[in-house]
Amino acid sequence: MNILLLGSGGREHAFAWKISQSDLCQKLYIAPGNPGTALHGENVHISVNDFDAVEKLCTEKNISMVVVGPEDPLVNGIVDFFEQHESLKHIRVVGPSQKGALLEGSKAFAKEFMIKYGIPTAGYREFHSGNFEEGLQYIQHHSLPIVLKADGLAAGKGVVISQTTEEAIAEFTEMIQHDKFGKAGSKVVIEEFLTGIECSVFVLTDGKDYILLPSAKDYKRIGEGDTGLNTGGMGAISPVPFADEKFMKKVTDQIILPTIHGIENEGIGYKGFVFIGLISVDGNPFVIEYNCRMGDPETEVVLPRLENDLVDIFNKLHEGRLNDVICRHSPSTSATIMLVSKGYPEEYQKGYEITQLNDAAGSQVFHAGTKQTDDGRIVSNGGRVLAITSFGNTLKQALEMSILNAQKIQFEGKYFRQDIGWEFI
Ligand code: AMP
Ligand code: GLY
Image (cartoon, rainbow, N blue to C red):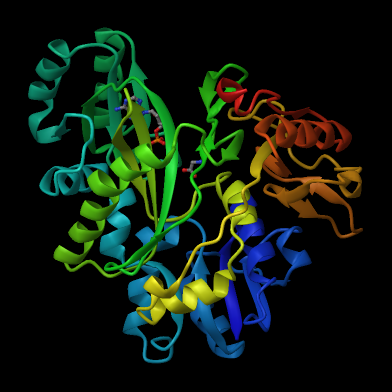
């Protein structure tokens, strides 16, 4: 069958790489894609949020399956769009309905959902312009640090952890009264700070049954030792050493099963990924956030470890046969390192030529922010430029291979963290 993949980052390169290995995939199109995805299919220059252009493409190219990479089109209702159009109804879309995407698209919705279904999460209150004064009072009496979350999508920047009451009040005021995050911040969730170690769990569900993919941990801070500004993710590892059988049993019983029960009970259409961001507090899992898609750069370590045919899994997802899937994971450890542009996650320059790309033997290089010029050169085109994934019998081995290749590949202003997975080595 012909498959369309939406998105253009490292996650989508990893999806394209994996999907193209399936015998069930005749032709893969990626919109808009990047020079990495072009190695596995045909890039088409349309935006992921231009649903009319997506519809036209699906008809012209006889698409039977659409895999949605990023959250934006899901939160904008692409799955509902396909269901409502006669010409698109038959297409198998991997992703939740607009209501399901609210688990990521609205922190307030996600918190209400967790409370209703008894899913462990940090205690919270929700505020908006109507109860702003009450919010100020609430912050005054709250313990520190305190976590403020803009309700809507804010490109990964909507979470502020304040160490002082004054800073929290200033942030809260900026969000509600001065539209710091635009409409996304018109509602704010204030929650207690949880201390522990984070990891990510990935579930693929049809709202009734589910399969569990390998666990992963991403490293969000720009600096080594987890210091400095938050980024989209500087690297990731899989599996996560502390996410052992005992911990995962708690995650299954206390989080995954009630989440799927909640999705079913609320009548939410869901045929897609639930990416659960967790924090382990003294060995007990709490949900930090839900996402309605796979993670980036987590996908770049999770999919290489999955030995099943991904397209076959997506077919079973749509046929109500997920229980027939037996997930096979490589026992090796994978680690990915992001090469980023100097200045990221703040101001950075683009357009620097990338060389020695083909010298990265022993690693899989996934393109994130790259572009091909008219004369055929590959240049940097974003903050996160390339993800370098390697396997090892140990995390240390995997990491060393990725570092070796991170050093070989060259572009001006290249920066990467050498300590991905540091707390486990
Ligand atoms: P997000 O942008 O939602 O991925 O959140 C960014 C980061 O903020 C998370 O990865 C956590 O490290 C941190 N965080 C969010 N909520 C909490 C919380 N309640 N307690 C501690 N850390 C948190
Ligand atoms: N790496 C975190 C995310 O994809 O949201």
